[in-house]
Image (cartoon, rainbow, N blue to C red; front, side):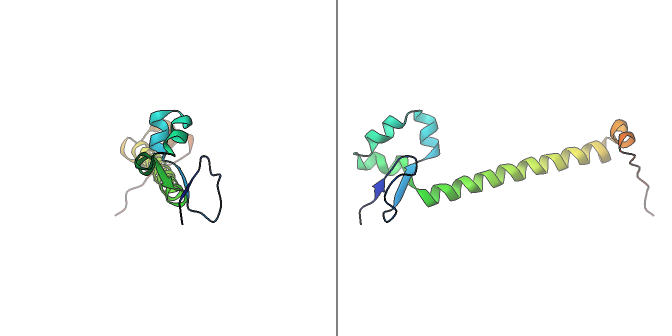
Length: 101
């Protein structure tokens, strides 16, 4: 079975579908270069990825970025409340800490 290369998700469902790699789109800034690349097998291999693989990679990247943002918020709040004992935040939200014995 021959691979079918497509732009923006169009193609025959029964064939292996490919899309331009994200890093290649950002570098070239032109989909016309990808259309030209379709006729060149060596460039096609390096510029395109299987749709499912690219989607999984993109989803993993989004999850990683969201986790990093969440961890940053937790770290910032911990620093402000526990390490710096920010008076404004403690007073505004009526938070007080007592030592445990």
